[in-house]
Image (cartoon, rainbow, N blue to C red; front, side, top):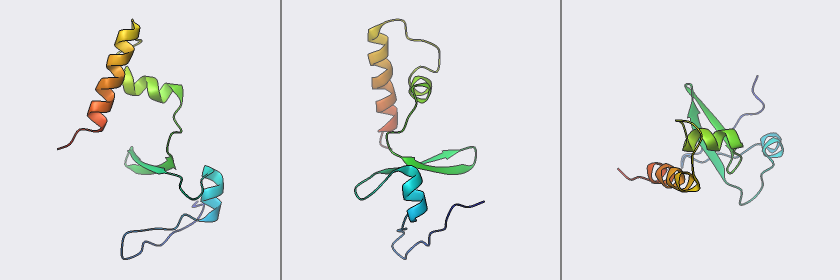
Amino acid sequence: MAIAQSKITAQGQISVPAEVRKKLGVGPGSILEWNESNGQVVVRRSGRYTSTDIHEALFAGGLPKTRLSVKEGIKKHLRGKHARG
């Protein structure tokens, strides 16, 4: 069941309904993040990651062995996330 509905303007903009803003804890200036997961688009407040989300994004192959490998994992993830092309 839908919480609320929004209409897309001709410029591709939407208004976030009050119920959704309250649930997400967002207001003017907040940043929303749009992700695709299993064929669905998920919208959430930016910066709301669990430690499990961060670990899976950085170290899919297992636990890091050293502090250096943690830094390398972060660099690799950011390079992939912000790659152009």
